[in-house]
Length: 115
Image (cartoon, rainbow, N blue to C red; front, top):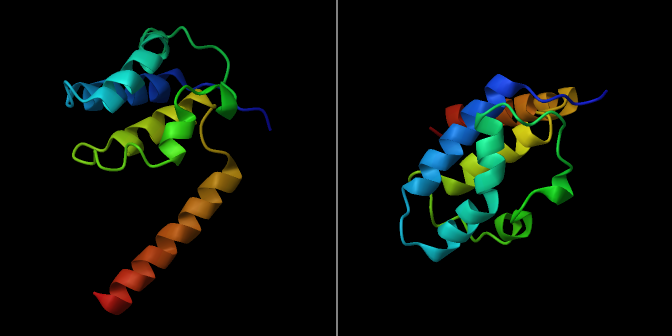
């Protein structure tokens, strides 16, 4: 199955990521990320992304995997970056959705049993 860009979801993810990044003025790690993503965010917001991006093409992907953005969680930089990345890659596959559903079921069961 070929992924396709959903311009509405991509625009929403881009706007959210931009807003989140703007909540950390003066933080160099976040400024670096914003600078690296600024043109992609603008293209996404203006409907200029026509093909999914390969995961390896996503700027600053290595920093996310190293946990650089984890301390910035209110608002959640890492979560916003992941959502934007997923949309830039063409969204979740059916397999991704199934895995997320299983994980959510486990979380609910765990919460119910321990909460």
